[in-house]
Amino acid sequence: MADPNFFKDRTVRWEGGRVVLIDQRKLPNRFVKVRLSTAKDVADGIKQMVVRGAPAIGAAAAMGLALTAYHSKSLKRESLINELELSARLLEATRPTGRNLFWGIDRVLAKAKGTRGPVRKIRDAIVAEAISIAEEDVLFNKKIGLFGAEMIEDGETILTHCK
Image 1 (cartoon, rainbow, N blue to C red):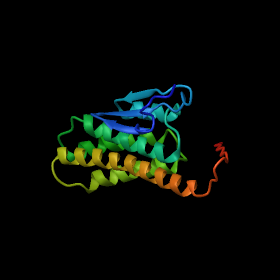
Image 2 (image 1 turned 30 degrees about the vertical axis):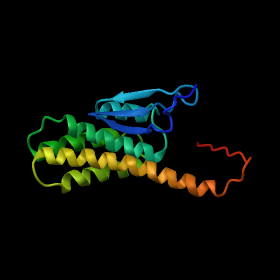
Image 3 (image 1 turned 90 degrees about the vertical axis):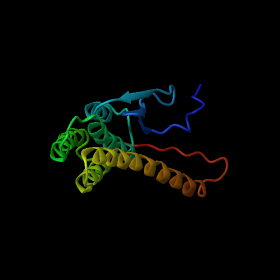
Image 4 (image 1 turned 45 degrees about the vertical axis):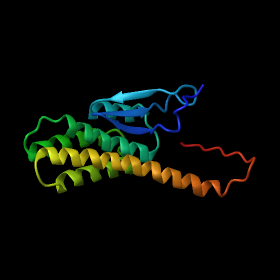
């Protein structure tokens, strides 16, 4: 039986310093959430296909950088940026052809580099940007669903397939 909160959950979600993914490998038979604490955990999740779909992978990579920032002990901006860049390389190696993955990483790095002020402010901006990316993905998917619903007649069946 499907979890009654299935449609309320997000594929990629920030939860108090951790990233929560719906494990796509278990669907549709089971609804399992995976909680990740580091960018390496997120990179492994991307490699192992816990998260699937280009936009969701981009959001997960952004969240991986948010984890790096959130848990960083850096006191200086330059040190934090260096940590983020190391995590970015780790995440980029998971899917070298994934455009959304690079887009999510680049967007978070740009936010980090463009935010001035104390390290805490930069960390908060990075987390907010990653959450924003994930929320935008949800909104875009809803719009796609609304547009697509107009094209489907009652009783029709749709099959999607990815290679």
